[in-house]
Amino acid sequence: MKRFRNILLVVPADGTDIGPAMERATELAVRNDARLAMTGTVDQVPNRLIKQARRRGVDLQAALVAERRRELEQLAGTYQSEDLTVSVSVDIGIPFVEIIRRVLKDDHDLVITPQEEGLSGFETRTKHLLRKCPCPVWVVRPGRARHLKVLAAVDPDAPAGDPLCRLIMDLATSLTVLEDGELHIVHAWEMEGEATLRSSPYVSMSSKEVDLMVEVTRDEHSNGLDILLGHYDLAAIDHEVHLVKGDPGRVIPALVAEQDINLVVMGTVARTGVAGLVIGNTAELILDAMDCSVLAIKPEGFVSPVTLAS
Image (cartoon, rainbow, N blue to C red; front, side, top):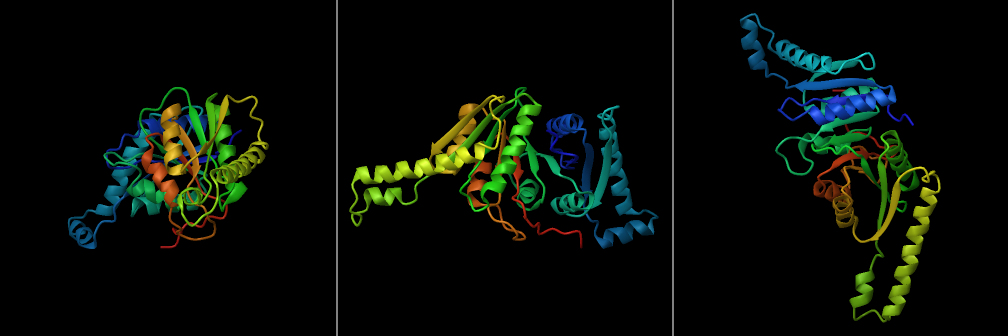
């Protein structure tokens, strides 16, 4: 299934290795018969420097934009072919803000960005995009394996509910089929208050009674997961389902390491319609703990705090 039609590739100016992200973007664009655009940003030059340069007959801001455009066009030229045309844009301002504005202006449906060099976890530009970009964001980390192993992290009981899980599954299954990969589906669950019920002197419940409650809770989560997966024909896909008891912030990174996952597809925001709602605590813990690439999805109705207006 061709999910993406208008891809935006972020090309940082800080020396970040663009190779793996560029390869991913071009492959995906060709396989989806999609448009691919590369975008870069330059800083806003302070007025005092603009005035000083102007006295010497130089438009400093325009010169910086022209030089950045030349660099991007040179890079784009090495990947263009009969099957792929790569367009280029350069904007002035704060990188993550201008990237999101470019998404809004040109109606991009996917942003691909390399992980920033020298930073642990997902920080600065990357984390801003994960929090605020209205379309899916694919953060590409180096060391991509030849065989794609996708982990779809779903929570049918989350506030965003079934629509976000369906979108995560749609993208995860599509990418798995597209690249003849391997799909893992994980749902981490817990029974709220179990530790208290087992240890508090104020609770008069036997261990067997608590065990039964835990079993009922597990069955409820299992049924919810079965209903979600019932929408998909997984028989033709190499896949495995993981219903794991435990905190998602620990369970999911552990499963990534155990199964040698190289792409996690997950939601980053639990509620909709709230401009600037920060990334959920659980999602942030998971993202910081993993060392693989991530395709982060917003729920339907997400409102970005960044707008086209200045």
